[in-house]
Amino acid sequence: MGIPKRQREIEGRHAYVDGIRYVMPINSWEASAMIAAFPCDYDAAAALLPDAYVHPFRYFGRALLVVTVIDYRQTDIGSYIEYSIAIACTKGRDKAPPLLPALFMKSFGTGQFVVDLPVSSEVSVKGGRGIWGMPKHQANLDFKTGLSWVSSQYDLDGRMVSRFDVRRPKKVWAPVNMGATNYCQFRGMIYRSFIYFKGKAGVHLMHPDSARFILGDHPNADPIRALEHRPTPLFAAFIPDVQGVLDDYFDCWFVTPNDLPEKPLGAGLEVTYPLGYSEDWLKPPQRDATFDLDKE
Image (cartoon, rainbow, N blue to C red; front, side, top):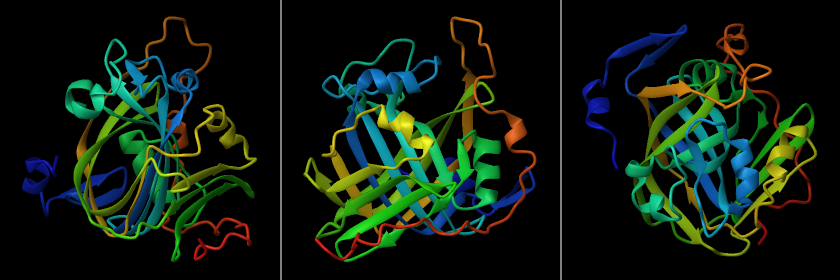
């Protein structure tokens, strides 16, 4: 699925939302990305999803933890890194059958529910959370490319949350021209947004030691640790040169649990209106000096 016709039709038009200016479409034209999907505990994954017609994708009795890091070097709001930790999911009143949603993605609303989404810059937080409902927050991030590994680390408050490594494929050959659906919770609602990618990827399929997702001792890692993800990913990929378009269209609906909530269902507008428009990054995370990106 390529970029929708509407995004091409509005090319060159202007938007000004929450004090942020955009030249349409909202795109990135110089970026690198890495992604991997790790089988994980289904019940633990379901516990992280709100009661809002969103269910974990079922893969042989397990769910899938999807980790994606994108190094955006050229965008309408400057450069930043985006580090996504998500659960592959479907949309509907009932759980979808196993595996079929991977083939019929539109019919089952196949996408990912974003659990945590640290980014480098404040303006990315303000736009991503305030407009699209993404759970963005500023953190210490990096994106490093070596001869053998591509790696990104996520620190917060001086402690490591996680480190994500993907082994560099020998060849980058697989064409990527697809869309992805993100589900996020904000203001007691589910926001569904759409992004489109184009590039060429190097891919590993069910290959041991093709990717590593290492959790640290920061409390933000605890919900992810409960997923007990398997070390061998279903797939892992590195896209050294990728172009992306974030759709200006999104939709949303209420989170509707059976029981009366005792407190607000997640963060609200109070977390976005005080934010400014800085493109500055926090200092890089504190790396393990023994990890060599060039060593097999």
